[in-house]
Length: 473
Length: 112
Image (cartoon, rainbow over all chains, first blue to last red; front, side, top):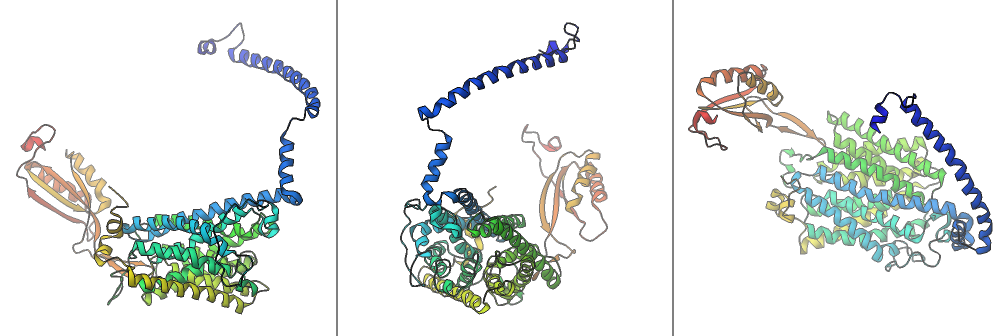
């Protein structure tokens, strides 16, 4: 072939022209042959109905028949369910965000421990949600306060995999509903894991996480999304500023109060900071959380409704970015130099603030809520440090304080919501989370102990609790 | 034989290495260290609280050379790493009792 191309001419014609001509002739010869086959196929197709061979159209008809009376909604239902599953995966990704953020903000000697807690939390969170959480969270008809649920069964059965499961307000199958909500459940305990990092005893934390996610979270959630007392009051919490974030944040506050600060953090001469060991990891974590939030808020539209999806994606993003700007402005003003960890917390604060109301506010509201959340979180972080509440990642401020802000802000920046109801709801859940966590952690403190020893804390939990190093040489 | 230990500012390492190359010194051991002398540390701030960092990053270069090269090496290091500001570093000269090339077993100045 190479010799052919190398030769200057072939039978008086340049080789490339010869090849091009041959290719064209072959191509034009091939087309009529194809057309002949096509003509032969058509008569065969006409004969097919007589033989009743199943084709693709019959399969589609079968799917519609399964939907029964809901067949006309099938395509929207399918799109919505697809979006729900993607959103569930995005919320799952937030656990990677938490893992990296917490790792980055803690010291190198505790990274394995932080990661281990995060692996445990997603696992126990989803499993308890299947075993009892889902049906406790959504008990159907109940007294509005508490109804203990059983394990999930076949959530495709009895038409739960059709539009009839939830209609327009919940355009997904039973399993879709389960998996989307399951991903939310574990985020509550994960909020606590950051606040107690670097000195909590692993086994005690695991027990706490089990009951916090397995019991407290679905019970508190049932008061609103499950149709309980808060729902009856017309409380508004779109994606969980109260039932997820404030819940986790105030649970964290209780645990930190029982646990105590890290050794050496609060001295007679003031606060001795324990800086992050990896800002790249922390930043990666925050951006992953931001990414996952599109599933957290976007998925909470509970269908592929284009009107709300576009709005929620926009308000979520504006809230986050305004939060960053708010935090940057306040921290730079108050603290002399721009602090990266504050800017990162600001992004998250804005996101938490917007989570209660992303589907009911406008552009201006989103910016205002985010900006104020960003300013609030800086003040809150400094405040908690002043009163010797040691929170390595700022979880109490980002989730607890801004969770309440977002819930209350709903009534300020959107029409039709009562600020007293919002405040009541936020406080009810926050106080419940606080009291529950305080009690459980106190019991654990008096029995198993909740803290590693001083020597273990100095050596680092990676070596003392796990016998492993995060960055092996 | 002498062992030269030079503690210099980290960003000067490439210049010092090149200067030593020019006078024929091809081998050295480099480590990242922390330290301070008269150069004070600096203040850092994390989440609203200030703290002083006393230990500053430095680079330590260790070179084993024949006695007749000592002056040249010191001049080269000083020339390349000096900035005139506090924190430029220090050079120490230690005697070497014996040196061995592991690959061949050569000893003394042959091993350098």
